[in-house]
Length: 467
Image (cartoon, rainbow, N blue to C red; front, side):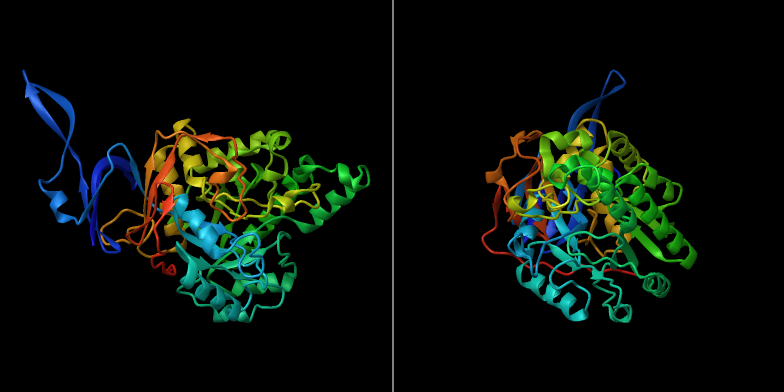
């Protein structure tokens, strides 16, 4: 079937223009760029504001989708999600969270290994791949988890379909901490795959915890103490050690969810992405929230690493603008609200973000924090380039038609009833967004339209990584 998305404002490859996209089956067949018409009056060229398209392009399509006034973007690629399957399916599943992803304009994801069992064997990795083929609404891939004792297993990884190796250099949900120095040296020296790291120094976290427990009763350690225990120093020390290791051994390192201004000194904004051996990711919650939001939102914004100060947030935003930070992701990590109760030591860390990540960043663009073109670059183009994902992340001829239509003038209030994620809550409840996802296409199929999913799940595919 041929579909024509007609007269949208296309944001792609660093520019915006009115155009039309012809989808033939799963791929983009043609891109029509609008051209302004000019007329001459008394020798002066006057812009009429009209656009020209080849006559009859509507006749090329079986279905015409009018899109005037809507933004058309390549589907987002999220390099850090936790979909909780297997073993934690009371919180979420690959099916439920991939639905939440496409509802938010995310058409491809890379899922993390801290499930039960953890994805630290080929058998566990293949189980997830098979499960995603059966149930995922978005294109999928799964990181292979490193552990203190599986270095030999890493040699057997399916390089074509695995984004990289995930190492927890600080403990978090699932407790996959890798702290054996010999193992780390071996992994960093033996693999040429991307090593994606969760960086928080465990010894500093433990010392901070003991410091506050010696002064304050545990039940009084509310979430405001979370960024003091999982501190700036804990993040910086761990990230700097990972950078030292990667630099010395020539590894390809990608540091996830950078949360502090201090860590930014470890990264470069002078090199093009293709030449970087050390890259970094910022997450939506660290670009939106600060420790000033803890009294209002409490454990709903408790993540590891912690949301920190206004200074940290502003530095991260600046780093995104200047590409010292390389991509924006979600760290979508749903828990039940019941699990989010307790003090800063007992409440679960993480929350759902897939549904609101893109529109929250577009709202930041409306405020002038970023540009729309930068949002698309950081959430679609650069993830595809960083990981070498084939035929996705851009609106280009013969690329897969992973696309999202956005209404930039559709204010809507987030309520618990509107949440797609299985966990059933949002840190944005009560907030009104300006932008809204109208329609999401995955491999040319309209999977989500005006708040409803298509009747049957269409085919999704494993991501293919060029090395």
